[in-house]
Image 1 (cartoon, chains in turn purple, orange):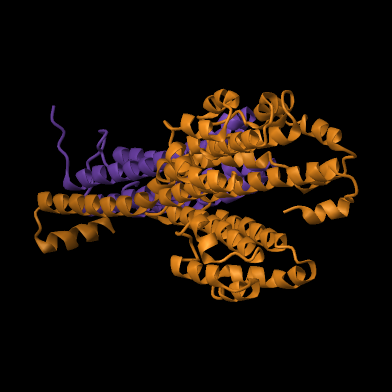
Image 2 (image 1 turned 180 degrees about the horizontal axis):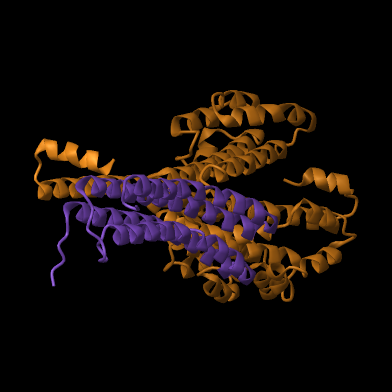
Amino acid sequence: MALEITLGTALAGVGAGVAIGFAAFGSAFGQGIAAASSVGAIAQDGDMFARSLIFTVFMETQAIYGFLIAVLLMVFSGLMGGGAGLSTGAGIIAVGAGLAIGFAAFGSALGQGIAAASSVGAIVEDNDMFARGLIFTVLMETQAIYGFLIAILLMVFGGIIS
Amino acid sequence: MADELTVIIESFGIPPEALLAIIFVAIVVLGAVVVIIITRPLLEIYPYLLTNAKVRARKGKLFDEKQFSEIIEADDVNEIVNYLRGFPDYLEHLEKHSVEKSLDIQLAKTYVLLARIVPDDIGKAFAVLSKKPDINNIKSLITAKEANLTKEETLNLLVPVGKLYNTCEQLVDVTTVEDIVARLDGTEYGPVLEDSLSQYEEKQMVLPLEFALDKYYLESLILASSVPADENTTILHSYIGSQIDITNLKLIIRGKADGLDYEAISPYIVENGYQIKEWKLKDLMEADNIPTLINGLEGTDYYTVLNEAVTIFNESGSVSIFENALDEYLIDYANDLSLKKPLGIGPIIGYLNEKEKEIKNLKIVVRAKRESGFSMSKIQEMLL
């Protein structure tokens, strides 16, 4: 049975793809940067495993934000069934929402990955750097949160989540 | 809001499929531009992440100021040895060798380790650096043979690190320096030594052979880093180039102190430095005395460093004042370089610099403790 998809719903699909695509790309890249540094640290000091894992896991959140927005877009645009489909205007807003979280999460994850890699290096050199490294690494989370909030607001006030 | 937007879009009369295609293409292009612009520089740091973490872990294990004070406070060498036994890196060697040899082994192993773990773009220079233990072993072998040391004494001078260690170990039984050179024929050092053999035979001094090896090593080192392709290799080039500048300066200063002229000094000079180019080197070698030589360095960092040491030199008359000033400058310079690229070559240079400094300082302390009459404050002064 072929599903009748409106232009707005199709655009929401693009938005969902952008949301998870860019967010996951940045997240994977950032996590890769942190993981490469962590493996080096653990190779020299086995006790670094738990602390390195904390810094490597951080970048998972950006992919989760992108994933949530993508799922919300798919559910409320009728792509997963149960809806009438979106108007063209709402579809364009959905693309905007996807772009907002996609790019914000992409940049945030990359920045966080670099900071996390540096922090792991600093901690393996000096154990006392853990708390300070954590604070600096957490900072980049805010940009992803801004993107996530704007994406939600766009969906709410753009008539996608009614 | 969405309905108003729909009306605006429909007023343009764009077909729905075309609008979808335009938006899709725009996102793909925008995405591609962002990804390429942002990820390209990041790909440069990727190869350094693993190495830097390993290097920084090792840097964290170097002695800090407090630990060094404890070492200086030791009553004698045995106490230092016992202190060092508390650290796995040193314990391993102290079980079998003297403290001086253990320190040499540690440093040699550091060179070999770095050559193994550094990224490919700087790998060639570090591969040359890892040849230092081989060169030192050949020099020890030649010196020992010239001094007619016994097999055991000669073996004791060799550091069991490097590709040529086994060859050097076998050469302990060889009777003359000429035979050693002949037996090294199949190695890269064979032709280097053969070229200087006539000078050795003429002067009956191993110095020309040692200088030839040092020159070959430094030339190989600068050659391996001579084409800087990015910021990392540029930093490496300036670090290695500065080492060569300083080696050249030390040679020229010593030469001038001994009253040697251009012809006598020039064969031992490595031409491609960093701040001091070939023409400048010629001027320096032709200088009449040390103050003229220092004035000739105006415009380089070395001028300030050496000029500050002139007063103490005038009082003591010892050129080691200049050598220490240059060594300290190199340590500070390497330290500055190590902060320039924290996700690139910086930590590697920082670790190498700190490790060399630690070993040199430990050797100074051990030597001072072996000879009586050095107060703690005097030892502290002698440290780099």
